[in-house]
Image (cartoon, rainbow, N blue to C red; front, top):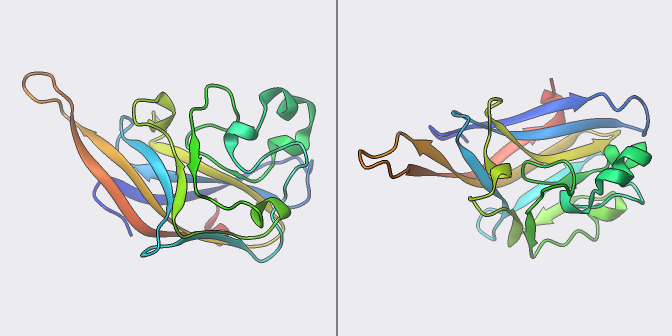
Length: 188
């Protein structure tokens, strides 16, 4: 499902230089303008989210389930960390990362299993730069490594920055995309 502000999900293969078993994918939320923001990804009872793979997700023993747990130095020293499976908003490691998580049970995901979210998600306050799309008009929301095929469904929230009002005050339209699906079968 796409709205005027939200264009969908892009799945991109990453060359992991065979440093880990499987294929690494980066999952992006696509928007219409470089000033648009994505600040929340998750699921609720009425619209649960999931990330599933036909084979286990790769989880580095030195990595983490969320990007704030991916330590940049460890990522440089251990290639397995660089290609770990994790969720994020706009950052690939802990450096300058203000992301938080609310009521997400990562116990199965950290063992390579599926991630199911019925009442929670990951988010960043909209005043943080990492929420803004930039010239690519996309925001990184997860990285996944697996030998299998990944399917997912998430709810995405953000806002589109319109032209300022006459007095210079910003104008925003909310992005509220529910039940957005993706598959690594569509990777570019």
